[in-house]
Image 1: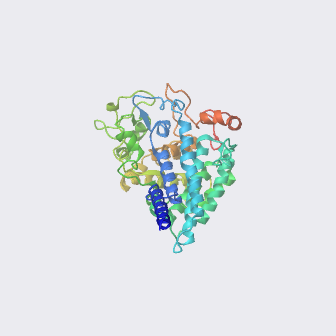
Image 2: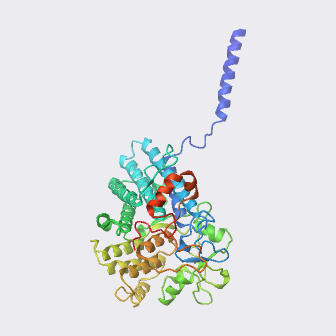
Image 3: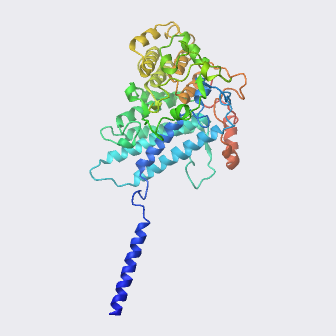
Length: 475
């Protein structure tokens, strides 16, 4: 009998220990992160970085003289170093976007989905992850030039080599061709895990082709043959209305509200105002978008002096719409597509339609997106300063000026357009610490921890300086 009691006691103790171990298990959180969750996180980090206005990470509106500063003017004067802006941009794109996308692809590839889900859904997810990765790498190339690519994201390569920017760019276009070919528009993808298109594969198809159009145009002065092939193969499949814009849906509560709201409203700070550089041009041309871009001051639109200290109360402000918590964050829109097609036509590429026709459509798309009417667009296009036939300069000036106006609030894309077309002709502030940046310098960590490869890359591009022209910036 004593033996029986002993056995029962041991059994009960073992059972109790098992239950105690169960108490240490987290039954609410998954043991592993899904590929879909990783994609959602990477997508948000990417859009946040491209649209925010935090001077530590994104100063493209200041570089392009859309906005200027009030009290602290370092960034308006092209000081990239004090806040290590290049380092932050680099880290976010590599660590918070590309690494998560890479892991997302691995997890999705190894996941077994329900038998009821078409294999095409998984294939679509992987293609979309690839498209987001290609977009991110293209931004890195356009920012720095030569970058780690072939050995990037490989933990066994802590000091990766830098690959030639043009070579990377052309490889990305080939990857994009494959990803586009893998999209099945008859099936779904991420659904609500996709905060841009909610899993609509047809919109991803248009976005991917628009990205190929942009990348093809980017290399037009470096490799005209490759550019022509990319542009002409994409031209008929690009974003063709504002309803197809690649835009992130933001919510009204933290941490999912638009980062511009965080910077301009939630912070309680008054750091930015529109510049006279853009306000004066739009006033001269009586641009109907002024009411959507800026507030009025005593019945007028008044811009501040770029690079100088400005009294916040003495000038127009950024419009209330742009400061909304729920205002969408856009990676690509219809207006940009049309200006790229206008440029392609002006270069002699066969994209259907003339440079003037696409130029007009780009202006209309921008005005209508912001809230203007067809009549507003008609009136604006009839002005001699705006009409393609009579606007000042060659096609680069005509398209460059109107693209700059349309890309307001999309500073990075405006910066790339400016470097390619050289319009508008911006003048650096009197107290600028450098010329107007044509690229970002490499991060300090790369200089110290990856010195040999950094030196090689710097030499290859012509020097690690902000005014070094990259491969797509030929003239």
